[in-house]
Amino acid sequence: MPAHEGHHRSYDAVIVGGGHNGLVAAAYLARAGRSVLVLERLGNTGGAAVSTRPFAGVDARLSRYSYLVSLLPKKIVRDLGLDFRVRTRNVSSYTPVERDGRPTGLLVGGGERRTREAFARLTGGEREYQSWQRFYDMTGHVAQRIFPTLTEPLPTRDELRLRVDDEEAWRVLFEEPIGAAVEDRFADDLVRGVVLTDALIGTFADAHDPSLKQNRCFLYHVIGGGTGAWDVPVGGMGALTDALATAARDAGAVLATGHEAVRIETDGSAAEITYRTADGEGAVAARHVLVNASPQQLAVLTGDQPPTPAEGAQLKVNMLLKRLPRLRDSEVDPREAFAGTFHVAEGYQELATAHAQAAAGRLPTAPPSEIYCHSLTDPTILGPDLVEQGYQTLTLFGLHTPARLFDRDNDAVRDELLKSTLAQLDAHLAEPLADCLATDADGRPCIEAKTPLDLERDLRLPGGNIFHRELSWPYAQEGTGRWGVETRHANVLLCGAGAVRGGGVSGVPGHNAAMAVLEELGD
Image (tube, rainbow, N blue to C red; front, side):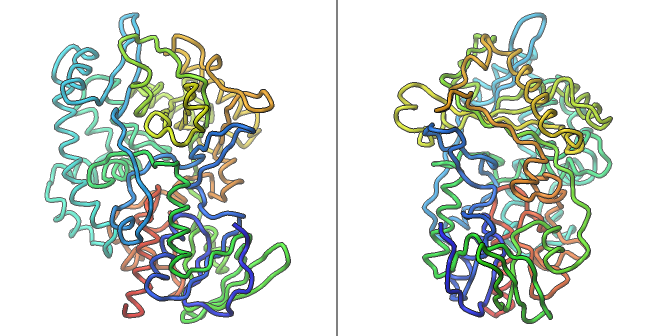
């Protein structure tokens, strides 16, 4: 997408950053008849929610940074008329383990009877499955009550508690460390670990962290769509941001790529935004400025004191395989095992050990990770020839690898961690993963890894944190404002993941920032 030339001198709204939230805001405001300019530093819109072909000469379009969709409200898709679809994964998860010297595992999905049998095969009885059902019935109730509030003005804590209308659920999710509930309800170490993982995706925390940041992470992972389901975007994540860019542009918004905002000056009622291009600097005036960037970048732009970055703690790995590897657990088809979330080294004790080692400044000896095979659910991300030959994608998300571990030598530590992480996967395979990797046009294995420091460099994520900051509770607190997007500057709003109720691919902060603007204007 080329940089736009010939801007107007003034707009109703200038949006800094063309990630998915900025595009949502642009589309809503433009559809309401407002003049909108989006300034995007990179040569394309989409931010972290993009699809790319990372392997030279290979027709595979991978969701490079953001993988799955859960928190995107259907309301936004409907309101903006987006040409965008998701597909449900038939299997929720598979977690391999060795018990009594033999390979086995837990397959969740394929129907209630199948899941019940899988629990019985692993644990030898009904208790864990019944506990699982009760626990997720509870989170499902909470999801139905909370998810619709994400696109409404922020409720107070008491209002949200009344909305949940379940004191046990409120205590478990909002008041006590999630580890207490996991240990109280489940006895099997593997089952405990599978439950806990939703509290640790992108969040470096112990199950009993008194800050409850693991609870906030867990909450956002189980409320999506009112069900907690995580779906595969058809065509890859870039299909969403392409659809959003089209919706914004068709509504009249101007999308200016290759334009980096470098300064925002405001008196609270009018603002001037200075931007830089390859040809020099320019400036544009706006009544409102919506910043689709981190709170740190917002502070840099406005000249305020930046907050301390929240540390990222994940390894992201993209792979293309010639075929799925065979499993040591011969009772499970690899096409089922990899169709959902494939958990590796994520038993409850393994997660605790990995966190303790990383907190002490060492790479985990058994790095936990989870893997997704998008092409099993949506083969359209692969070229027809690759599909015919049986190629598949694998995307790995590693846990408990805080940015501090990479400070001494990012490249060397990345290589060491990748080798160790894949070794944990290989322990459950009947053949080495390396034997299944495809090669690119130059004969190199189709695999790339990104550390928190890589994400900080490539995407300007402070500390490499995928949420821009620690996730917040979805209710009003001191200073959060009516919509959770307000800043100390009356006409400057934060519409990125660092807003209250931000994080993940949701579009919620973009929607809420647009609503705040339109509400002020009386629309």
